[in-house]
Image 1 (cartoon, rainbow, N blue to C red):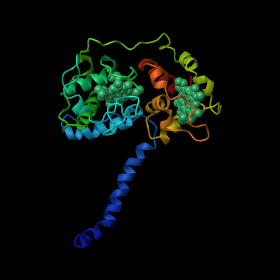
Image 2 (image 1 turned 90 degrees about the vertical axis):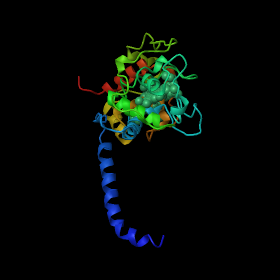
Image 3 (image 1 turned 60 degrees about the vertical axis):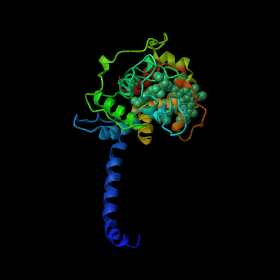
Image 4 (image 1 turned 60 degrees about the horizontal axis):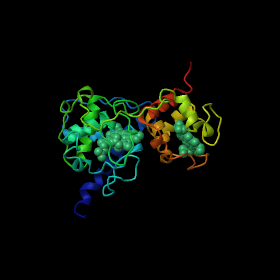
Length: 279
Ligand code: HEC
Ligand code: HEC
């Protein structure tokens, strides 16, 4: 320690300056509430570089509203979706009756989550290419590289993964999401799920919960440092993740994630996102 100190001490001011710029660079985009810009992902990136981008995408696009990544906690973990820790070793041979290798399985899990349902889970995961995650093809590859890194070494590069349309729904047990009659009518969902008992859509009108007008929701999304749609989805499926001050805590039902299918959740998120827009 004493032998190193004389070399390190003069560098401390440099570390402080670098640290400031790293913080500053991270701080700027988080003060905006616009959805994150689509990442420019080049075909030249190595699997390890893609995996790093993929980790950021998984954090920013709402995956963690449902999934946990807790080593040692088993597949159940603590979320609404399976624990993704160790998924690469767990799914090294894909799944029975579905894609037989990790990369194809992960592509299917992202493009068509309902094609193979992990045992014990409901069909609530929205396709990653649709709202709210809205991943582009290169982003899907980056997420797959990241998931590979959870238990194995990432190997994929842009171009190695099937594009959305060329993914075959391999599972014979594949069933389309059971879209209820109300799927197309988010206003009816808002009433039938009891949201309107606790929430007004008019600014400033606090019932049990806060008013769900777009400006205040956008502000909350910015405080939570999430894209608007990812925040809305998180608020519905996992209300405990972020609790607004000044309203009762823990009263919003925690099980909406299992009471709606992906299409209904998506419709509700879009409906809330559109509130307060000028006609
Ligand atoms: C609304 C909740 C929800 C969101 C948001 C969500 N998932 Fe899922 N996910 C689930 C559930 C539930 C399952 C298990 C049922 C199934 O297989 O579809 C699942 C399954 C998976 C699987 C397969 C896991 C396994 O053990 O085989 C992967 C991989 C996955 N999700 C990745 C993601 C990624 C990446 C994102 C973000 C782009 C995401 N999920 C967003 C709920 C969600
Ligand atoms: C029993 C009352 C209750 C019901 C029913 C309820 N909520 Fe909530 N909701 C709350 C409360 C209280 C909060 C604030 C505390 C928190 O974030 O959990 C909240 C927070 C929210 C937020 C975040 C608002 C912000 O500004 O941070 C959204 C979005 C939301 N609810 C949507 C819904 C939707 C959509 C439904 C119906 C599917 C629903 N809620 C049903 C009580 C409720």
